[in-house]
Amino acid sequence: MSRYNPYYYLLFVLLIFGAFASMAQNDYGIKILGGAAFVFGLLFLIQLISELRSKHKTDVITVAELLGLTVIAIILSMRVFYIRFPLVEAVFGLAGLILLAAFSLRLFRTWQNLHSKNRTLAILLVMLHGSILCYVASMTFVPFMPTLAEPLGGTGLLLLLSFLIMGWLKREMLVDGEKLSAFTYVSRVRDRSIVLSALFLLFTAYMGLTKIDFIPKMYSDEFPQKYFELVNQAESGEEKPVNGKYKYEEFKEMYDKFIERHVSSDKK
Image 1 (cartoon, rainbow, N blue to C red):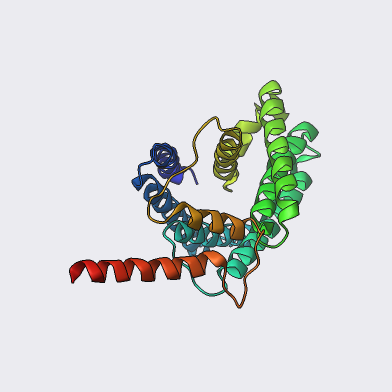
Image 2: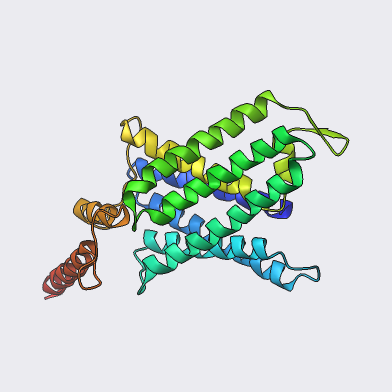
């Protein structure tokens, strides 16, 4: 995975730049975030194809992980650009469940491989994978079980911070005759734990800082503020669809018709 690291670094820079641009009320910031999410999806897709075409034995867990990440990243990008297709929530939920299954198996495999070699390192890696599991579960269950989403996200943050603090304090552990840290070990693993942890940490920091009004929320002038409030209600699970439609979809249709009539009258 190391050959993709420069692309990941660039995408992280774009995410941060897009977020700050959006908070500064530049509408192009949201488009940068959507584009970055789409490129993340393409990178995951390229790695998925590479894994499937590999001459070595295909790792089912890696395939499941990359499949789930590809679908989630592309759907998140589509949300930014207001693109929707039927049953998108179900597809998103299914991708989240596939990712949960992949990291559950990876957590079990990590413990199985490491607990006899170095129990401390095994516990640290279980914390890392456990934090990703909690974050993915939180993101997946928002539309279906919103009451579980926030506690799961909080648990994920607690596990991730515990991994970072304990990993920094315990920087030398003996594994197979080699002294290394938890961070060194994770950097050698072929999964995307570091990428996901960094993404979730950025997202949590943004959510926390906006909640206490330390930084402004992201901005887009493409639709009225009411539209985004309705989208948040739908995505948080506060609102259920009626006849297969959310209120924000009806609002968007009415708004598009209003704009179309307004443009037509201006031309006349």
